[in-house]
Image (tube, rainbow, N blue to C red):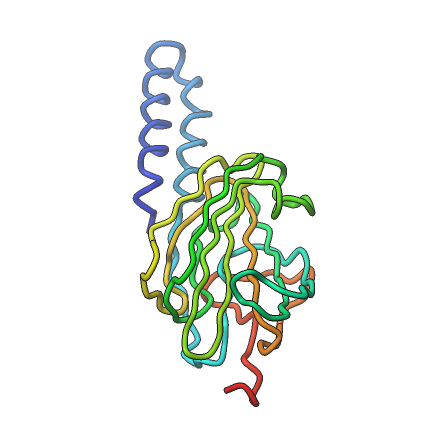
Length: 211
């Protein structure tokens, strides 16, 4: 499956391939064909097996865990938290998914810079889009952060929308970072260096005394 958002890029690359092959030389079309194939790969939209257990939180993105840090507070969660930072390379699936079932109670878009998404400061300086998700058990935030190549954050949701766990809600184009902030009542089950898959990899579990 390929996201509809990718068709413009794919067809533009194929059109360039045809034009360059006719006007310049057949070999001139090769780079554009390769580019079209990459766009088809980048905008792939795989199905995922979503864990049904309501106490489990899943990764919002494919990629590599860059850090897990403790926070004293969060403006939306309003209690001590843990933040999981996931870096998405240009070869990862860039669809973002909801870590848990809940309603979007907060949404914030902030313009910013386009530093490399693996830099420590990107969560504060780069363009980003945050949603706060709440259910009857807890609150979390998920933030899409643009990178040096990612110049477009796409969101398909708005305030008061209800998301199912693992539901697709947006994407970031071409290299980016995603952050999840969870209260301390959620046990973090990933560590720095782990590879994760959006909607499938379990990143946290609500502690038994909080269920």
